[in-house]
Length: 157
Length: 157
DNA sequence: GTAATTTAATTGTCAAGGCAACTATCTACA
DNA sequence: TGTAGATAGTTGCCTTGACAATTAAATTAC
Image (tube, rainbow over all chains, first blue to last red; front, side, top):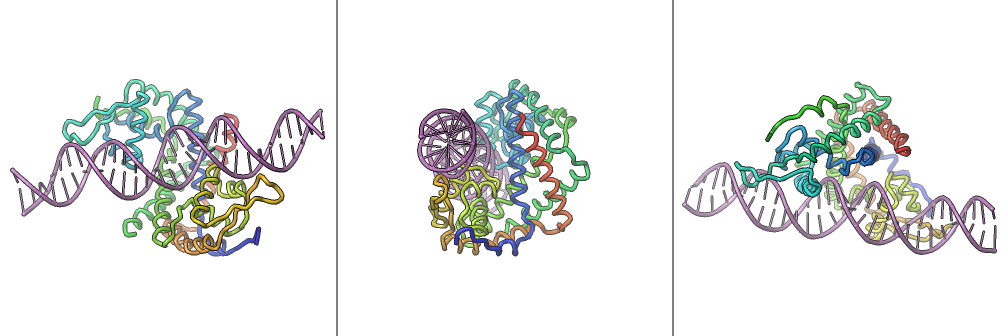
């Protein structure tokens, strides 16, 4: 029994890209985390995503941020909690719609984005070594196709 | 101030594949989660990874499983905890090396793998619609290149 | 043969994300 | 007007994963 191999899964196997995508995304997150720390910032990759979105357009609501970053509402809510705790963002109730917050970068938040950006760009470049623009188009096309396929399928399950 | 746009990040932007990879992997995980539930199983995608590895080779140690699944030791330890709790696996101390466990599938674990497999295959096929073998080779080549680039780089940071 | 190092696994802490339940506010419409 | 339904956000619970520290067993070095 022990050490016995069973080949059923291999025979049935289709394109098993999941684990490769998974480990790559995890290593990317890890690399970005370390570079952000090396750059002297105290933010995580996910916090970076939110901060940079605000840097590009300040005063977005949390649901705007959620759409923009492909995150869900509770996750954004908690990331904003952490960012406000660090003094990088502020919540201001929206005048027109009092359910909404507008989220603003503080001067400190703006600083940390500018400090973090080179680390982000550096990590992207390192990850992309040996790959070209055609690869980029292929990668984006394929993963967005997978995304679209699953998105179209999911609602009716 | 409010709603102001800042273009610095766009100008500096390199290939920003991270968020696209990220949202795709999250949707894949979600789709698999739902299919596994629909198939009448009570396992998660990560638990599936461990169970299917054991199905292919029973009696692996936790560090074997960690290598195989690209997970780290604490994560595997906790997943095995959950799987043992559900009665799908059992830990047996290794005779030769008493630090190690050998992890075995129970009959129930074997059943749940066989029940889950069609759901996994189905989800892979749905995600892969409209893509071909050449795309598969491109995807694997590109993401493994990114992985290798970052892995080579990381140690010296 | 004992000491120092390495390895396997566990535990605690934290961040992130998914789900469900909840509050508060806004919109539709009858 | 008032009530039903939709929307914005929060909170609790759970799983995964990263990191650091710890225990116990094995290996290496002296």
